[in-house]
Length: 164
Image (cartoon, rainbow, N blue to C red; front, side, top):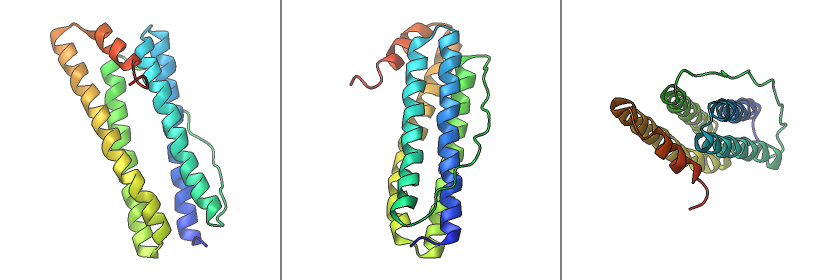
């Protein structure tokens, strides 16, 4: 059985993961609107992945006799000035998610919640990849912005996500 404190914290994390999905879906809509379908596809896949993350937390609570309590999801931003601005927000958002997962892990340690610690280790590893991907794209976009070329090449590359 999961403690009430841990249950509440996991429910908060579910909300954060579902907000992440909503944010990336909003970014997908933005990129569709500016005719960058590769960027949009990348964001659609990212939104799907974040929903899956929320569902991992959801299932963890359900499996341990906890009660999932879904809360309202905040409305995400809908417009960005540039692709670089959007991906900088992705990078910042992923860093915030990492901090949230670390805090949840610290709580699991304090609560001596060993199943949560095991489950959270997967998320800790996943966040290394999430932050690296976002940072790499920001770096590429900064190079593109400095040179003023290759946005369509990057759009094509991002559109290949999931085909490898």
